[in-house]
Image (cartoon, rainbow, N blue to C red):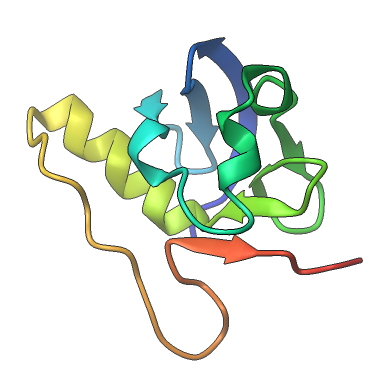
Length: 105
């Protein structure tokens, strides 16, 4: 299972990520900011507060929004290989869809 081990805000809605497999790159999340939990992230001040959650091993924000590390990894790999189509989010039991909204705790 791939994990996000480092992240930093780059500009606008772009985040640079480093993963446990050594891969790294930028992902633009602008098109993913829809829905109850993600709409508040359109406020750039809130978006800039992105951090790696120590238990979830992915990026998260103070309002509880986060993205599945697999989704982020696919997005970075697609950008690096020149495949600019949006990656398909993983879905199914276990709560690892594209985005996980408000996990609590």
